[in-house]
Structures are given as structure tokens and as C-alpha cells.
Image (tube, rainbow, N blue to C red; front, side, top):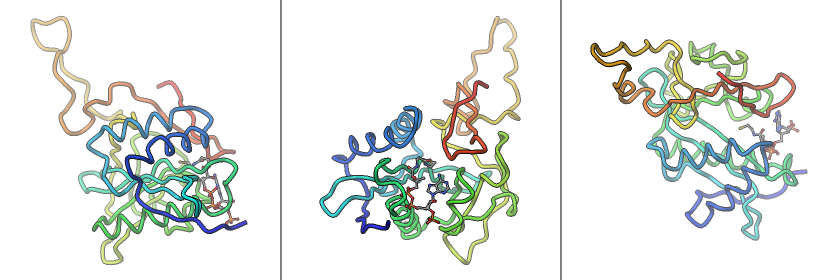
Length: 218
Ligand SMILES: CC(C)(COP(=O)(O)OP(=O)(O)OC[C@H]1O[C@@H](n2cnc3c(N)ncnc32)[C@H](O)[C@@H]1OP(=O)(O)O)[C@@H](O)C(=O)NCCC(=O)NCCS
């Protein structure tokens, strides 16, 4: 069934409804907590949190783009996408995703990555990221990481995706901090601007039979 959905950028008044949609769509509160964390993070970009509503204005779907990097090239991360369970499969998710991608394109953004179900995101133009030399610093199924260029004149850059700190994906390749002579422990902060704030790495991976994410102890 396909219904007509209205899409628009979220307003401050939508925040509780967006939270409710995300909580309802996922089995745990992790994704809702992620959205809340991203709202407080520099990765948040006003206008790139889009809701899908009924003609009566009820928020049923949500799609979010936040800042990430492919190596040092600015890009956007599509996550999470959520639709109220009762409305899933009726086009609300697609409507929100198409609208947020269009908003990003209009804002001059060029690249988007998504970690999700390989049967869903190609319909929006996403391609397997590894085919473009794009990878992650954690192990995920190769076809789950996808990337999209919003600008036909710009090819996707190769590199490693660096997520905003609220995603909790640290680079395992980061060198361990060196001890400071004379102190029993290291007091230096994390490397500024890269994985700062990411103190509790959480590996998130997709079970092979589901698009749901689950946390896995590092
Ligand atoms: C994933 C989600 C956002 C898609 O939104 P939606 O409104 O249900 O999907 P749409 O109606 O736009 O699209 C329906 C199509 O997507 C497919 N689809 C929906 N969810 C899918 C999934 N998890 N995996 C693969 N395909 C999926 C449907 O099979 C259908 O395919 P068809 O058009 O070929 O028949 C929504 O189902 C949802 O909130 N799911 C739970 C949370 C989740 O897994 N989010 C994604 C990870 S961030």
C-alpha cells in the first residue's frame, strides 16, 4: 500500500514525536538515544532531519543526515531512518529519505553514506561503498556499507568513514596514548577533532536476517 505522505524539515515542536517514532521503530532505545546525542553534537545540521507526516500532520516517519567524513572529506551519514510500525511498508520511509537527500543536495552537500540493509537503500541511488574504496574501521558485512554522490560531477572519494562521536565507533587503528613520565596514568585528552568524546566504543552490526541493529560489547 502506498499512501501520500508530506515531508518537511523537523521543527523544535516535532522533537517529541520524532523521539516517539524512533523508539517505536527499533527494539531498544539505542537509536532514540543516538538521535538525542546527535542533536547535541556538532555533527547536527539544521534542516537535515526530515519528517514524513500524514495529511493531518501526524509524524509517522523520520530520516536523519548528520556530518561524517570519508577520511578528511566532509560527507553525511544517513541514520537512523524510522517509521511507526503500523505505517511501515507504505512509503513513509522512502518519502522521508528522498526528501532528506534532496535537502542535502540543495544545501550543496555532495556525499552520503549509509550502513543498512542492502536490499533497501539502492533504490535511492546508494551503491556498495567498497566498490568506491570506502570502508569502515569496524567489521560489517561488505554490502551493508553503501555510499551515494549527490552531485553527478563529483565522484565519491575513497577512504575510511569517520562517524560523529555519538555513534560510538572509534578507530581501532588509533595509536594508544603514551604514558606521561612521572604520572601513574595518562592524562592527555583524545586526539582533538578525530575521535574525541568517543570513550565507549560500541560495535554495531547487522544480524544477517534483520535490518535491526544490535549492540555488541567491544
Ligand atoms: C526501514 C524503514 C525506515 C523503511 O521505511 P518504510 O516506510 O517501512 O519503507 P517504504 O514503504 O518506504 O519502502 C517499502 C519497501 O522497502 C522495503 N523494506 C522496508 N524495510 C526494509 C528493510 N528493513 N530491509 C529491506 N527492505 C526493506 C520493503 O520490502 C518494500 O520493498 P518494495 O517497495 O520492493 O515492496 C522502516 O521499515 C523502519 O522504520 N524499520 C524499522 C527500523 C529500521 O530498521 N530502520 C533502518 C535502519 S536505520
